[in-house]
Length: 306
Ligand code: SF4
Ligand code: SF4
View (tube, rainbow, N blue to C red):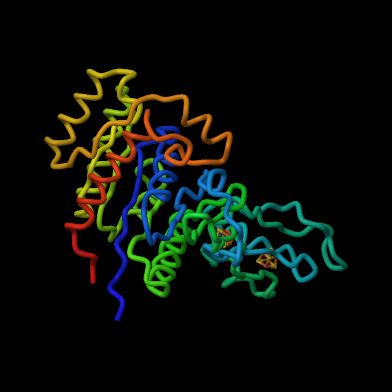
């Protein structure tokens, strides 16, 4: 039986730290890898890896209510019961009443109370399509990624779906690593990105907000008992803060994976739809190669769960 693939998650306290360009470079350096883009609110790994979609699935994060105006008698019971103020008396009339009630699909939290109590059975309560997820081929291996619909908020569940599918593909194809581009921040999507992973790499910038974010993200990783490492990206923009980030990381029990210098080659590579390690050998690409070797060495020490 195949052993369970290991999961490496790359996260950051906020967007724009260069996390995704490091993931794209790791994808180029790793062998036998499945990529999972769990930054579903702002997915951009595809911009560099140019995935060719081979499978496309709808994603439903929950149910939504909808009033069938032809059946509504405008009794107002649903509006009275909805605790989320999602029901308005401005729906179209029908043969029985001049106006009916209407549900705002963005405000509806999908609790189902209105549908349960509508005596006329005028409320449809069905799974809502909140987005899509895809399996694709890239030049560095298979990739699972997703797109959440506008104003949709079930990204934690979508992240879990992307991770689960990536893990299944790795197992089926005998690929030993799932490389996850995690969601930024510390909310539900990032928790869904990291729970049960083997190693978390926190990418941060040498700024005071980077220092603050490191503490928050490190606390989340520690809470879920996931070993963590830190990489300071663009460290040479502020060497003192970079050193302080590494010192605080060590105090928090995190490993230091290394530093990546600021380099315009990152943008030049992106314009050419390449990861920076494909674009150049030295400069920050050399730093990323070193970080990868440290992270890879650490990964080989941890046991895959289960
Ligand atoms: S409870 Fe049913 S019938 Fe009454 S207003 Fe709401 S949808 Fe219409
Ligand atoms: S499902 Fe719940 S939140 Fe949505 S409209 Fe009905 S009562 Fe309100």
